[in-house]
Image (cartoon, rainbow, N blue to C red; front, side, top):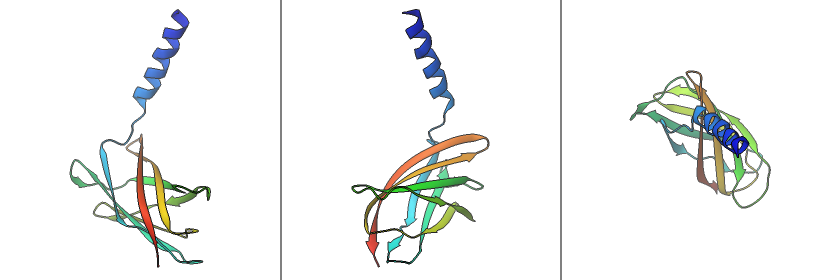
Length: 120
């Protein structure tokens, strides 16, 4: 029993140390389009406390929601005023999931969003 409590407390301590990104609000401003063999922009707006968040470093791992095309890694660049941009070539249109992982001020954050990719 003591061992179970110790393991539970250790897990609780580890989970408390991880930030879920709840301080940041992510909004997809421009979804990528699908066109075979062509890269398309993806733009995400990030705010903290209702103000544009600057200086973040994050990567999105894109996965199709209902099909397995693997994961596509996309690194974002700060374009100013809370906007972050990248481009990607997707294998098809449909519903996609972005698993966002990043770091700000030494703290890690995560966020998940779904979006629709249309055929161009």
